[in-house]
Length: 230
Ligand SMILES: [Fe+2]
Ligand SMILES: [Fe+2]
Image (cartoon, rainbow, N blue to C red):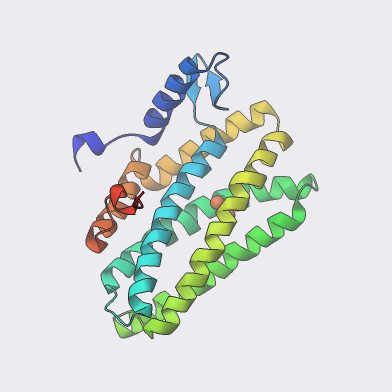
């Protein structure tokens, strides 16, 4: 990987937070935590960055499902790689953080329990859908039954876009209010340790790079391509 891409997510976000804090009069634009004079990344900022990775995976699944629905060839490698990142980084890491550190605290405090139950059911449903598609893809060496798979992928993408929207706008802001400042800061550190343990010091940047490689294969790697004609 290029030196320039070896950016630790926290170094990157810390610089952004410090820049924004310098611009905002009270330095309170971001809810970053300060310890020993150093700005740290909060647990919610961490989770929202991971949502950015998930959104890019959903764009890949969009592209693959469009190709399949149109009866075209959907590259099995791109699907397999995107499903692999989804499993390792989103299902087995991001969703586990939510399930281990956020959902139980909402349940214990009896806050937004209905929402938490729906979010948990969607994590479970997402795993079942992706298990079903990847198991038959492994069996046949290609993405099976393209039209049916396209339908399942579209439903999957729709579910996770609304899932992230509710987490970003309802669950995460509420989370900040149900834990003490010290617990909130401590969770930021635990999330960082967990990420380094599982993916290494540059785990986030490396994951983004792997997503970019799939986007390149599908020719959707340039953000400018998504700009509408004005
Ligand atoms: Fe979630
Ligand atoms: Fe999430």
